[in-house]
Length: 346
Image (cartoon, rainbow, N blue to C red; front, side, top):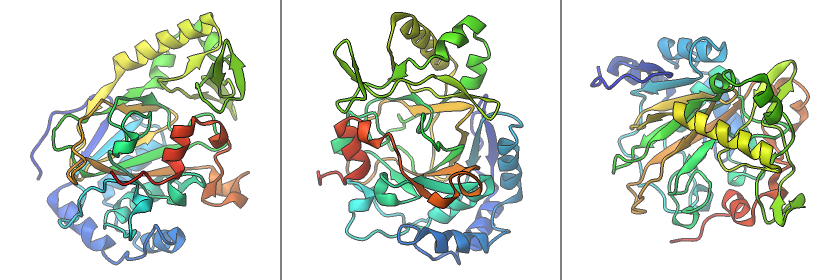
């Protein structure tokens, strides 16, 4: 068994035995399709290995989907290739040759147990596996490849289709030991608010500052104001990002108070090689502290997959696995470039 580590609160933890890990590795070895070239043949190969996922991991993922227990699951000791290449220094889509590194099937097995992998047409050149690591050109952005604090957030909020779950697989840990992924149960926090506080947060008065605005208020360019708390199909929906701003003083006070409460409940996790963190995007928010990358091939490297339980069996079926991010046009220009354009060689 791997060396035991300090227990985490508010997060379910499954640590695979070495035997479970190696059996998982052997089961997914026949998956050879390149998910960056054609995702459907790749996911079909994954689905041809129905016994690949360790039973304890499958059970924990089923509990997460059924909302039994915490909204975050950490699975440890997953198989990572010993010949992992250096962490890239520029966007994955800009590499001379885009190869699978041998971890994508691990990530896809977990995602497929929760729902359907999907992504956005404007993101990462349409890849459904997103490779996240520090990129020097993104250092100061609120973006997954930055180095400044990555504020707590719901993944892609205020979209027609937002992920129900996301999965983050650690291929390489931060060599400095400083990087901590931060998770907070925002549904629990909102449950402590009064009806009056909830009513303020339910007004469409929260937006992002942008140089491609929908509205301009008091000289500030803003995206379309949205409510933080809303309702979909009779279920409360909470969408929060740490750099939202409010359109009036009362709403700003409510936002600031919510932010303090959320941060006070956050749990920090130092993801290690072979750790998979799976998040219920409707119950928890996540982020990361500031880090000091070396940009030398040794930096932390995660792979991410977004999962929906609604996209391919309902209103949006015709759109397939890649949907348009209709808010893309109103993102700040530098953020839009980071999403869509490869970073320059440093």
